[in-house]
Image (tube, rainbow, N blue to C red; front, side, top):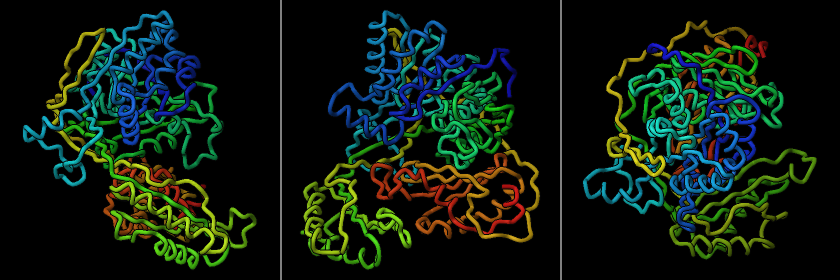
Length: 589
């Protein structure tokens, strides 16, 4: 760490983890305790697709209107208390979002300085890049991205445009597609006067931003050991108090529900990550250097994070239309489930005017959720699921006839549980890479525009991982039991890939987990991932292992045919699998 500036820590509060999160969160964070900055993350890969559809219907509307509504509730208080507001709710239309916020200010009789940051939208520049012989490279394959008609293409910007806006007196900063952590790094770097070369400090802020970016996931939401956390009926949103050296304390307002523990913070650290080098536009934050400490109730210190230079490219989130899909489900009730599924499948294709090979993609799955000797009708039901995809909307809709013909002519107890849809358009997500010097940030404050280059820092220090001293794996008798008795998890989508983080809560348990949960063992426990590329990243400093499972979500969330298309439950499935666990670890539970 470099020498401290001597400034007090800045407390940055989160009020949104996704587009549609709790409306009252902004008011709660502003009114229920002291904060210096209010931030919120509204964007995800799927959100950009949704906003592109909205923008196509109503030009200028490709932003999160819920943020504007929240500003109407808290703008006056934020101005009175000097609370800065930074949000990526601008989506595809940061300028129009800023205009909408200004309309709210005018309505309230307030005069905030409102800024917006864009330059991330590359959709209109794709032709320019092509003419200049500049390829956007596919993040997964390393080859140029497919030459299709994209409906959105947005580079992930960093924090320095936000810093510029705050330096020029902005009270409210609206951005387009920044990284989730950038909206936290921006206020921290502005407050402490950091430069681009202060990689450790920026890395610490990235980690703090990553912890609080998903809102209540840091305070017990979606936490494996949720039964240990009180008040989860309505957990409070988190804040990060970031010091001049980049270390932080994660907490929440006193008296709110949920909890902030080393476990909840560890769980969120594992969310949607890859290897230990967490790549970003401002810094590569080394997650294998993080240290966690429980300071007090609902206060966790995050320190020690080291930073390395960011890559020479920026990630680009790109969406295109993949065609049309039809999703259908038939209930399979009671006895003879496999036989009923086989008959439904044969009868369906006999009745359908098209054959399976006529479609670009056909996926069928039998979901076994029925119980033996079921006590209710619902407990007796499994499901046969069908998804077809094709560029031709008429073909995608033709499957409805095949299903209708089965209603009175196939299995006993035939019924459709609902859900799905016929002939609906779906999107395909692609992660690309573009040279960072081609994507400057445009910062507009009070109508005056400045350009902030996306230059990388010149330094690139070598960083050694934190390697704690660990005991030998416990030996002795074992009991076959669910992995989740001793291990927690957090999983999520990364384009067509999914990450699956597993953590334990003692060094002895980690030594056993590291020895036991190999990639081969994961393939055995999760057969649907057995044929896929899997990367394994041990993180002993936070008693965790992260797996990156390539291609399990096909072409991304909007295209996935998995029942859990965002892989949110992938880790909980793993926790339900039985393994041989040392009795000494089970006794600790």
